[in-house]
Image (cartoon, rainbow, N blue to C red; front, top):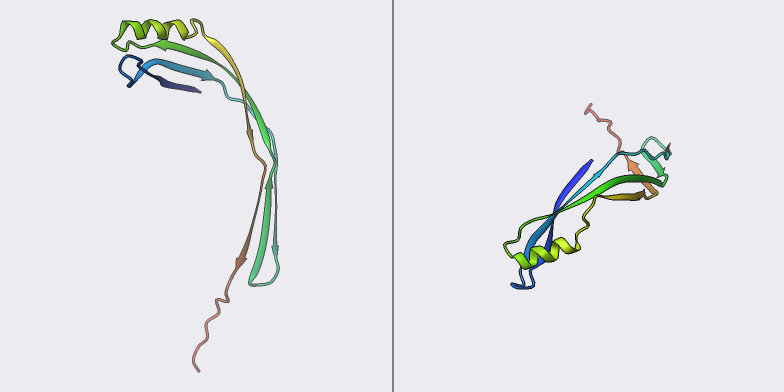
Length: 118
């Protein structure tokens, strides 16, 4: 998985935003294991109720970040940007926790029978 985006800064000489660098995040995919549980109860011919639970899952990721300066048209600003950007590729460690949640529902079905005139 790769994410590329431009990094804007405010040009201190013009007070306007300008793209000063690109950021490239590269990472792999990983696996998180959890479970789902659900129940459905038919209370009557017309009424059903149900509920489900999804367990919280945490997934750890590793990757790299690379920053590349972009020419802004102002040599002083370009020099400042190069001074603050990391010169080497950085190693990233991150995680995403997908939250647990509960959901439920009720279904009511009206009778579908037809009456015929006699």
